[in-house]
Length: 267
Image 1 (tube, rainbow, N blue to C red):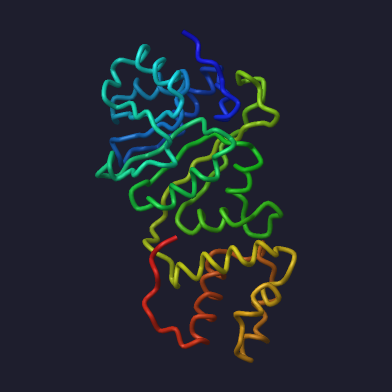
Image 2: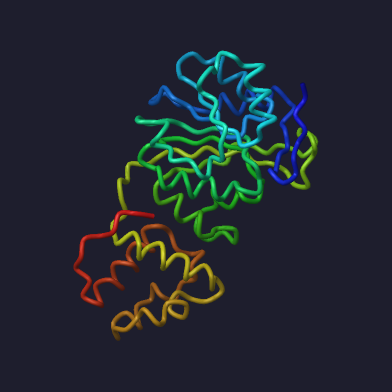
């Protein structure tokens, strides 16, 4: 049985087993004993995951044809094949303890996958994934880079991000139009931000939606005190701002309005 790659699902099956093995070896899941693979397809990563007996592998796959293939070729997974859309899952229904995530992610939903990871960040200490090279580079980009953006800030607030290696288009069936990039993200020690996290999210989005403007211009409706209007930190553009500087701005804006409430702890 061969699974047909479906364009609407963004499927591009990795065919090089050496690369697949390298991706699996990049997982440093030494603090967890459970791993969730997203979109196993025909099991090119799954086969190597199952060879590692130090953790229990579960797979989630939306494509029914792939689910049938996995059930036929990897019977040892037994009840650990979730036939569903990862983006719709309540992960607490499947995992009650920390778990790592790995996968050759569909390029068309890779950003959404990482937003979901953020929702469960205190349960997911590590993710190793292949995604579109440009997106992978954007997530790992430091402040000051032209590719640094909203998701870069959100992820870097809670995770350390490493760009590991690039995979050429000809290593996939069918070949995508762009190269792939493999990244590893590992949870940092920050339980929550040092500011109102709901306001943090709003300000980061507002700033990057007008990324050519200075923070002063993009946030002018939120800066009401004369002291803040002349503060040099607002001369910066959003791509020049690290997580700590965004936290500082959020605290400043909260304090000027007399917001003494406890920070919202959700992103």
